[in-house]
Image (cartoon, rainbow, N blue to C red; front, top):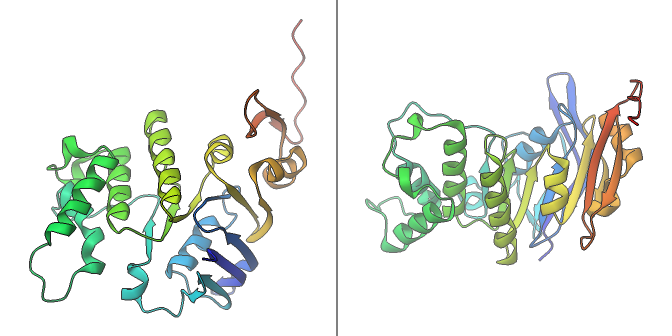
Length: 269
């Protein structure tokens, strides 16, 4: 297994170049965090990997297979995607939405889910803790609840590559930790995970590999302890910060000081 490999990718929107010369790797069986400020190109890059954005140039492969050239039906058996928010006007229950993850594996003449499909759906419902409202209409849920349902739908797809765009943005702290722990367990079972994140300390805590984007390009990648440095945070985010390591942990912790160009606050006695 070679994981996800993105090489020299360019994505354009009209005359504007959104991604230019973008390349990185997401190691197999690992959680890779895609970080960077707003407008860095994270969502566009994930869209390119999942096949929603057309490449002007470059290659994207997973375990050696060319994802952009892959037939959508075949790609859907390999890759699952959870976007930042997803709404629908259809009157679908939570269970209906989670069951959508099984569609790539069902034949065109299949009228009802198989017992195996139903077991996968029920397991996903339990894994994301949405059992208590599984019979409710999806559109009646809060943003955080909908996000958990979409994660359950992706889990029901049993993906080898799972792509997530800000999967914790609508979740409370407990739900964030439970979801990120679940993603770690998925990689231990063999899946490869790529997720865009804003919270650098959550990224440092749960990601095995970080990819830093700025201005439509990848400017750094590696282990969190290698990537998260004061100089990089100043260059990419425009903030002064200190990096510390807590006793008993090899994971870095970012302590923000101030935005670049501002005067330091006076020290208290």
